[in-house]
Figure 1 (cartoon, rainbow, N blue to C red):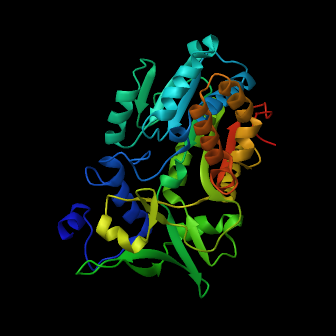
Figure 2: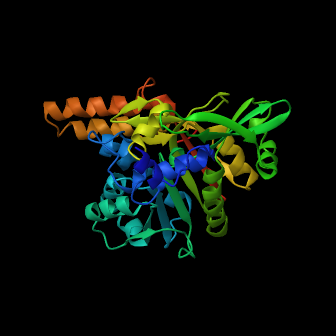
Figure 3: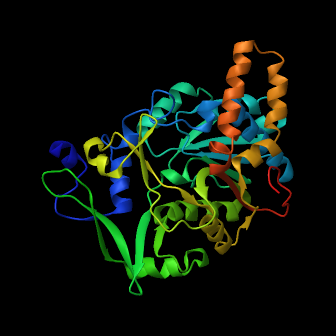
Length: 360
């Protein structure tokens, strides 16, 4: 275990902020979780909506088609998938877009992927010449742009702060030999971080604050590109609207939650995520002069976009076994006690048109 620990360049008896620890555990080259294994699907550690059902990806594609129309059917549209996973969504997206020849001729498809390991997996699945893999958005210089991320934001490490005695203290993790437990320690928060946190109304009065500093750094680049070119960003993730005042960090292995304390024994072999504070995300977009549609649940969005009607059409050509499977996958996507209500949908945009589908 010590050798594995040293691979992550973590030093015993020295503390490290939560987001820096999670960043190493997930993305450290060759040893981090997302850099060496396939985390998705039944044989992985968690299942995402695109791997549950092609219907999800088809409906999102239809939403992109409708958004292209709302943007005036531009002859040059850029579509960027953020964190494409194993490529399941992109594959269905590409095939579905081909059913709309005019858009198919106009669209440029980009996959924004941090992990070289996952990028290689995606390239084996996707053989479309018009698809380009990018690490930044600098090459996209003209035309409206649509960003889409499914379970993208929750995979970006967060900072955690405790407010007590009229001051903010940042949560760190500390490790001592022998490596058995993760100890939580708190250090006086940096002034710059405190200033940013105090600037968000949603976070005022909270004794415990989760703050996506790295996530907002990513969003800074995205919102700048949207404001330059027009367009928007659609994010679907699991999260909440009202502050929870406690840690939402969770670790998952083999589709089961494990205690954060057990991460040391499984460093680099378990996913670590947190719930997305959607009202905080909304306030961020508004601060950045973006318009934001009312946040809705995944159930509301998919049903509004016609997923049930689409399922009924497909059902006519299905075998009894296929019908049973589709019913099961729809339940997984829409049931209020499963993904239906836990997952939220937000769309931030810059456009003269505000009548985008899927929202109230």
